[in-house]
Image (cartoon, rainbow, N blue to C red; front, side):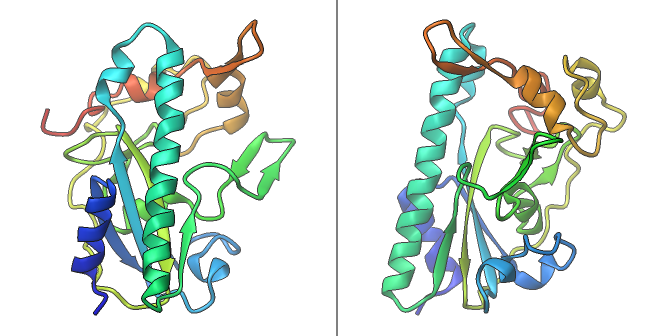
Length: 227
């Protein structure tokens, strides 16, 4: 029988460091068109998974290494959600994996604003994986903001996890807002057009690297709340 315990065990075996579950009813405030039931009619549960971004990566002086690891994290989560979905499908469960990054369909050219088919950060909050920080990154009590996320939508009701019972940010802390070189943060959301103007850059050889990840690195809870 497929249940929450079995799914979490399988997610861990596939490489996920965290796995939590949210019932579809928690997504009632999500924007129309971006709710789980807009993607899968009959969706009843959202399985949210996270893998730890190697913390040592942010200590290097070259953004090439950080960019490389970021790409591999995308590959890792997409592989986990694909394989978990395939296994559930084989067991007769309708299971749809959500891309951990690209592709996404919504794009506002004027605002330089993209939106995935499901907000993985908000799904993670609803599933109890953590809370959203003022830097708009998910913060988990044990792994901080060094996480990459994925999700699987299923048409079966699974035992849900409770929301996280801790606060993401230190009270009164605004270090990410004050330090953002693009002034893209306001403590609630992020101006993607401003962020994109500084976040990535093309190299002389025609490559591309992430040029700024300061909001992740500078956060006092980057590596966890208890550390």
